[in-house]
Length: 277
Image 1 (spheres, one colour):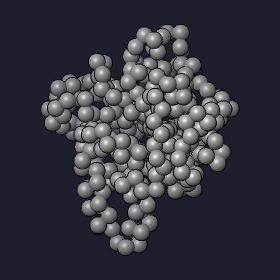
Image 2: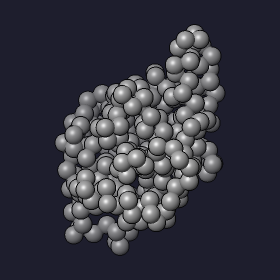
Image 3: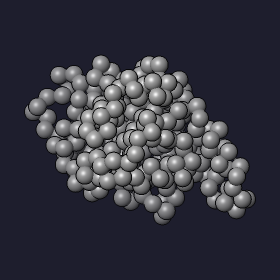
Image 4: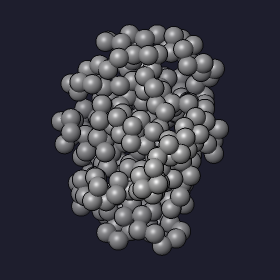
């Protein structure tokens, strides 16, 4: 589930892990970020640097620990809970990580789960209670020919100092912009996610991202959170839908909203993504 603005191989998914990869302390995260920036310097001089880190790389534990820190605050998840939920997908995940250059602190992360022999987490979850949607029904409804070109937005987590209007929602919209740009670059056609109600409303109403309910489903309770939405996105609809949304705005509203929207659909003002495998 995404927090509010919020791959299985035996070599990395062992019972003995018990969630340790989600349990870096703030001091340990800070030290790991400094090492990441030394070993993988990011170009440019903007405040935030952006990394794409494979789930098998040890630096990905920075992102996992952000997930747990934020999810503990909003949903009460422990490192063990996170391991239980995402452990099977670790080798098939990559993380978009925003780093604050000024403080050398991690600011937020977005997890992408890629298709594998075990499927996508969101589609696996909606096949169970209470929705009980068969995979083929979802594929047929949304005309998804192959999951090889479908990404699962597994999580979005922004740390408290970087959330909300005080920070112009920069980190959250930065991560969505990086996701959209990467999806377009890799010819990804579809995305799925399980979103809490607040995140779904922000994405569809404030940013006009054309998420829709998977197979027309109603909101449901998920891991104790009511109003959760199972969401589907056609990637190629994002730009024209948001552009039409901007065209309908009056000039004052457009001037205030354009920085957020252009960040997401055009990657305006975003740092170059550094790939860490």
